[in-house]
Amino acid sequence: MKTRREPLTDTQLLMTITICIFIAMYALAMIFLGGGFLRAQQIFDLLNDNAPLIIVACGLTVVMIGGGIDISVGGVTSLVVMSCVLYLNADGNLFVSMLLALGIGLAFGAVHGLLVSYLEIQPFIVTLAGMFFARGMTTILSVNPQKLTHEGLNAIRSIKLEIPWLGYVAKNGNLIPGRIELGVLIALLCVIVIFLVLKYLRLGRNFYALGGNQQSALMLGINVKKTRFMTYLISGLLSGIAGFVFMMHTGAGNATNAAGAEMNAIASSIIGGTLLSGGVGNVIGTFFGTLTLTTIKKIVVTSGLKDPWWQSITTGAMLLFFIVLQSIVLSRRGKSRAKG
Image (cartoon, rainbow, N blue to C red; front, side):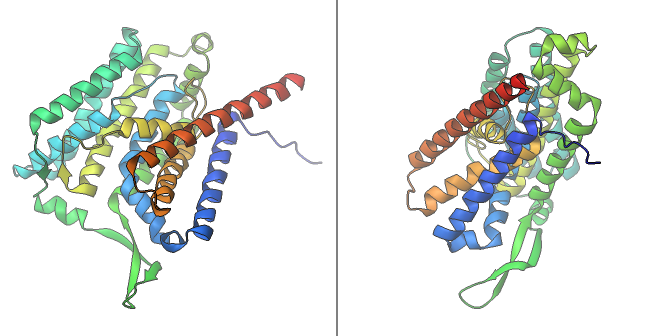
């Protein structure tokens, strides 16, 4: 007797669409553009350059699943980078700098969570204020760029995971192995941990219930205020981690670090299948959403359109495409369920 196959949930369906579009888009780039797209290092570079964005986008996905928004993540990341660079350059302890990064992220997440959850202030206003505050504090710490001079962390930064069989042969005949930075491993670990929390823990299920329908969540006995608070706390924590990973990647602090990261993180989450209305989303989809967003930018540059506005135009067009696609898919799905 054949068992009935369960239909895909909205979250699984939108995630599957994102993954398929990314694979198709990258395959077309390999066919028509060739060059770097034929090398595994192209994927590795996308991950190396965007590991902080992946981490930030995971935090934002949690907040959006819970029906909220957090536009402070870029500012918090920038503040963490500058604070840690200045501390380490003053002969600071590496372990303490990690605690500093986590502490700054948690502090912002806790304040945002308290104001949004317990005082019921609009999250956009609260996190907008947090973004301005973090950016202002970064500028107060230092207007000028600061290069990381800490020998210990610079030594760690130089460590890369090498995969010879995924390398390529350079023009001089030397084999260049595929290289992955440590920050990518941290980003992947964050994706896995958040995925497990959302899928298997009661807290994760509460996030979905809160974003889906707050009144229903209350009727189920869920502590709505505490649950919403936890979404912002997680977002702040991941912003702190992203700041440290950003510092490991660039080796410098700048007042303009992570500029636009909040918008890119929101775009990555939406492309990955997370709905702004809440209740639907998955960090695996967000991971591929980030890769999709950064790949289309790479395709635009490789195509010869190197002016920055072309990247903005394509990002906007892609974001609109995915929003419309999500609306059509979920609308048709809703009608099918109604008929059934």
